[in-house]
Length: 583
Image 1 (cartoon, helix red, strand yellow):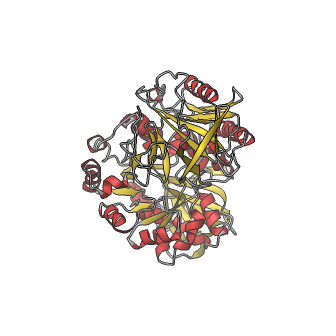
Image 2 (tube, rainbow, N blue to C red):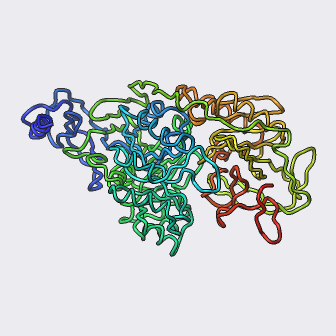
Image 3 (cartoon, rainbow, N blue to C red):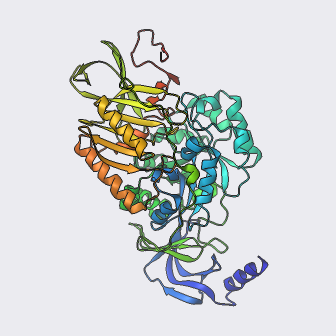
């Protein structure tokens, strides 16, 4: 270590040539907001100096820009549907050199073993993968997951060098109520001197104050500028999200001013292969922000030093002596055209192509994760008679749903509103412990005709979720899903027309990113031809209908769940508005 420090100092002082020097390049200075022209010397994986330097290798960069590598402030790697190595190949080529990941998807299926798999699978990648320990496994006590993680379980990993703290506290009601189980996790994190991520859509007033008093410091679920401003005023860091389903970035830009922008960051949360390869990753967030009026340097600050400051990441996120040489060479600043990506001073991607390979980790313990009781002909039977019923109404480009209460009628086994609008039946099947639980409901707005879609990706407990306009087609989709050990299946007129296999915990493929992108793209295109509106990603939208922490009406293996009331409700809207448990 001493020799490395001496070598870096010697190169910085100009007494020896640096390993690599970018000559006459425009430096995006995220500390001062300036763009400065100078040489930048890289040595032993670090930035040695800025000024006038000679190098063993010199690259003349007139007209090009140098900025820090981008950092995604909040993501679930599993949502890319590929192994972490394949994910790295996709996003590093687009300028992302670090991510703050919450592995609660695989933890809900495989518990601590799933987190340990993610730690092992992200080792030695040209991508810094930091983990936040899942705080809510399961997300709520109103569903069944494959594991339950308490503070004593998380304590086994809290001191890992790449564990930065506690992941998004989705069960904000338990935090506000100061329930012992969640307080124990918060105390574990605070004792270790680590951070706590938030997740509190719509929380305001005294409830928000109580939530923040626990030590929560971030939120990526703001929908309006007013919500973001209230949280910024209370000291939170706000993440502007642009994922595959939830897209809040443009809506939240007005919340920032010249001071509060230092507490704003970018994240993707969930990003599918097609969107990564077509639009990009954090570079897409930056381009979108610039297109909507944000200064390019400010946008890059939000993607770099702001994240590093929030998560206490030393020596990353900026271009300065002693900082790790995670840097990007840009052909164009306004359009964020990335020519080269350097990780610790080594060229790892060029012109959108990864220059590295990754090995497949041992995933044998993550296989064969679908365990549910055999379905009967009556598994999806829904008896609602002639009553007003609760219907899940979809909201475009959002994880939010709305509660619709209408009388419905059936014709040829299909459901319709009184106005004649088609509804789909939705079911969540417990798939971890073969309990036989099946939650049933109706959903409006998805538009699928003469078919069904089934998936083993259903946030966050990842039970099987299936939607369709015909019970038989729903059965066929689930049976195929079991045969391929998890994934997503599309059925049309009684036949499987497309599927994507995700055998790793029912969440991830063992195939290359490009291949998964093509298969998923074909499936989505086929679903759109079957009536799903273009503003819905049918797979991503379906996967969030089982998440009982985002308003308004969701569904779990135990039935319909009213997030605002935080309780299960019957599908029939009884006058007493009471809940009648499954019989």
